[in-house]
Image (cartoon, rainbow, N blue to C red; front, top):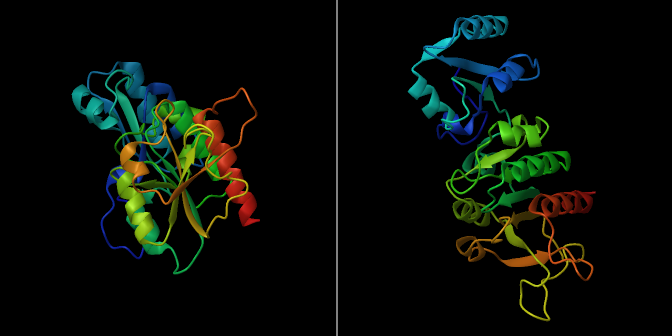
Length: 268
């Protein structure tokens, strides 16, 4: 099946922006056994043992699919993880994942929208938890760049409790590229900074008190280094989550979750 998003943008969608690739024997069987998921294809490495061939052939057939075979090296390339693919993968349709250009093309003129942007995060567990929080808060999009961020893999899916399959993921080459597109569409770009990021004795405005426009993109920086320099140069300003004395910062996923539900509260 080829991805065929309903979008005013007629630019083709890469399979990487339409499917979540699940690898490993247990994750693939779980995906095949979940009726809420639409599985596009299952690929098993040649040379797999007889039990694996039988198991995945039957599981694929139960979903109306024909088990595909490929070389072990090809499976590693398709999975993008040569150490943990265990010789099998499945492409699962992600109905709300799309390129940032398609999201903006489909956004009605002057419509409000809230987008969370992930910049430099490296921990798959944090990414999964953020996707869960953003989806639960009803945000219109989470920009997960193709470069500089974990792919949506079994670790991310597990941390999201499966929500990653249905999250409103937006794709761009990099966070800076995605922010440039959002700014051109009228979004105000704000970074979520630590209380002391502006220097000693100063702090960005509180997230809870700052005026937020109808179209806003809020950037969450990496676990160690925060917002990257190229992204910081795109921002219109920063906001912070005030903390009690003695606590310098929050975990990236926790800070993002607080921000997601503050955006939801503002929406009412």
